[in-house]
Amino acid sequence: MGLHRHPGPVRTDGSLTRVDYSDRFTLPTEVTATPEQWARAMFGDVPNLGELFIWRAVLGLRLSLGRSPDTVAGWRIGGRGADWIRLEAASRFLSANLIVHTGPGRVSLTTLLRYDRDPARHVWPTLARVHRLLVPGVLRDARPARSAGRA
Image 1 (cartoon, rainbow, N blue to C red):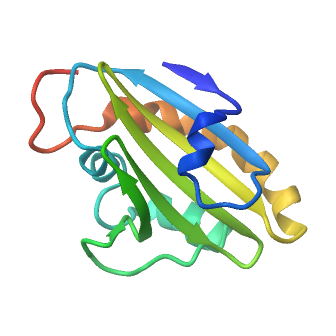
Image 2: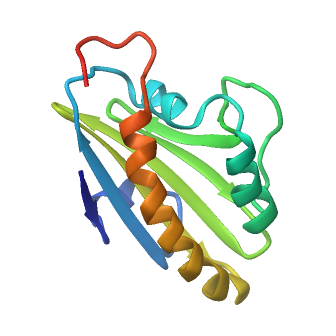
């Protein structure tokens, strides 16, 4: 699994006008699934308690409650293509995109953040360390529904 700090081409799938933080993790896999299936396998239809704590309590992200075809774990589906899906959320001090890309033999998760107010510059650098430790496990543990092949 690889970490790439500044995935230039992926930014075209993002909705942020400026990117202050970006990373991309890629997992080699034989599993065939759509980007939305991968996103739901990674995060579920609704956020778990740990995600709620980090996303809502710490980052203050405004997430939707309940299950919806328009959201993944409370994040709004803001865009999609044949090989990608973009999840969007914002708080009073930052805006975020999570972008899942699929391709032959791989799945990637990209995080893009824009610092909208000063607290983001102080909060995110510490959380980024935790984020970079957790994301590889999120990718490895994902088991998309209706997939073909094996990871």
